[in-house]
Length: 383
Image (tube, rainbow, N blue to C red):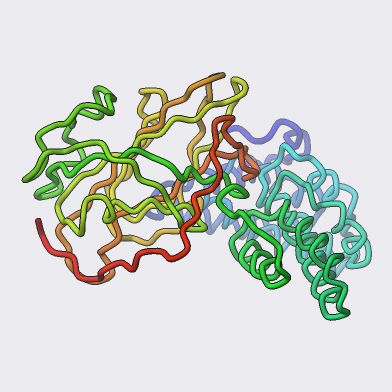
């Protein structure tokens, strides 16, 4: 595996060999013993070139290798700091290069902050619109504190302005939620689905059979054609297309509502997204059921797992949007489990750029509003 070109000239032979051993770590711990040996070699080379070579390797590393490299960088940095040999210049160059991985850039900034907290404090406000959500975090936190201070001083309108500025850059739920609550407390309207770019209106169809979890691989009619006027033979009943919309602030589309609390069943959701231009984008999904996704008839990805948790941006997929109409089809499978925590048969989907900022469809309608959401029953039964 090659290292990042910009940092290749910095690599001494031993450093290069050690890093290559770490980059070669495979799934299920394959290569861990060699990586451990290489880690020991790296930390015994406490110089600036070694540190930056490790950062360069992060551009090519997978999640496991990144953890090894980060740990080695921590030790090398600490040794350099103790010997007063650390310089912010090279770390700063890496941090400022927006082409480098977001998490690695954040890590570089954390080291800069440890080395020179005053300089880091000066940098933070300028990160509000950085493409990396990890680096925007501190700038947003500053605005949240400022907004709270203004609110406590009774300067309502000024607090709302500051909170809105923070919300415009926030995409992480642990910042979006308190910002939304603060704005609502002050009487300001907040449209979280639009802020995130969640797709709120769909057509759904089902149920189809998922006995013994065979429905994930089975091809049902919506995978071959989309005709909202058609009906098909479903599981124990006719399967017809029905409109479905979300009133959830985080865009959850709940199949239990149009279809009932079914088990061992498959459902599909279809929507259309009008793009003002041809462009790359990210499809970000949260789902605890088995699922598949198609965009413009092309299969994008799928996951045959059930009830392993759900969160915003759980899965990220690169897609190409066409100018004009784009079609999106989601398949969601519910299994046989009847425990209370397996009742969910839902997903949330949004379209955004690589930094997580929402891309809104030109045909996006106003966010659905419902005064009182229906309360969901908690006892599913097998159909």
